[in-house]
Image 1 (cartoon, rainbow, N blue to C red):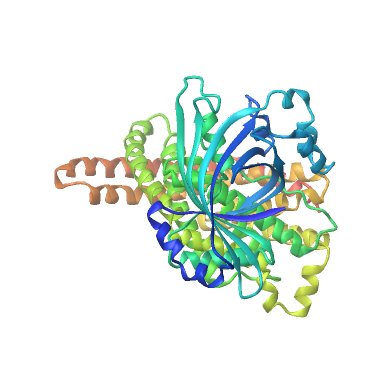
Image 2: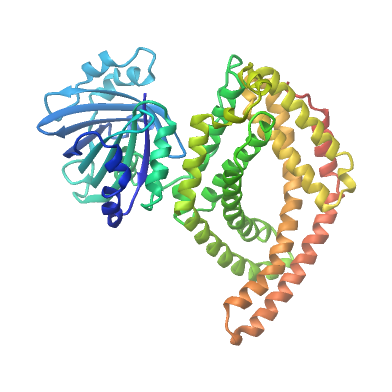
Length: 532
């Protein structure tokens, strides 16, 4: 299993990397300089890519080497993949050699044995790189290969499937830190040391993924949470690590979409991933505690994403759903809300491309990889961490349900603040149930999550109204601060529109709170059986 950390840097910062004292202090021998030409092959409909695999043939120093990478995960910049490698006589892959090297239980082996796949393989894109390699040895004895790649990814022309003969390209300037021997936490120690002097961003996509995106003109897509496959034989600590990694995959998987500054769904899904992570940390807080510094950084990131998401919901959902007499006022407000949403998206993009975000994600991953919480755990906590997960999962779900039932006792006559507390409790209960779902029978989990979701939907709309009320109070003042004095009459009209829509929404929320739907959703949830 290959374990590597990918970091991106600007071309102008390469000299700062080369001169970094860490490289001088920890490099064994002289850096190695290589020129490489990689040819990636796949079927015309990209079957290998669809199965999360990449097959390349590399020319370096007069030799040809084929490499197949498949499966694995990407979490917070840490890439873990299966890899098979061997020399070949020329630029064509040797599938027989790969077949002999791949383990029988690997799904990619069966795929490559299909005649339709083997016969259809062809070049789809290529890379040309100038590579510098440093072999590092940390003071703790860990061995890390530090690679600087500078070059280009090309698709089209006579090297891929470009029907129009044009060649499309994207530049590459990145660092790969690959663990050769030792603890994975050392990768993050090295990365954090480099980050002190060199602006770096986490690299979520491999060169293969970037090449496929170029070859197939694939747009970025928001990444939703993937189902967790847990085993009852796992320890509590192993399950926490699996859950945290799953959450970070969702966060980092949406990094590029948020960095683009426009994709609404990427912001939403990154925020969901962050909320799931914070919920998981709360779930395990009796056994392990995130350091305050990292906790504060998560709150900072959540704030940047939350502001963009709140304005998106106001502009695209809350105001868009209004009809009748309120529609005219809503249309006038929506234009201003969209402008504010675009500004908040730009700020969120700046956040996830900043060194602060990089340090936050590296710090989180280092904490997880080192299991740093063990340093401050009592003996009783360590025993609970090492115990099997099923009793912990059942106790957690029972506790979450009791909290939700207690908060919801007066739901029908609750204040907005009390309803908000019920909504948060419902969300945490749902996250916990989804985290542990694979430990229980699906026929019990599905109806429970379904009724929790229905309750969340009812409470969610009422919360959206509360958020809308706050934003609509801010909107005219925000617009006034961004406009000149000649627009005073327009600002006055905006205030009138906002006042009318706030009143309309308040009346509609009051009607919805008493129309029986929330009461029905609450009764249906209380009647469903807890999976545990």
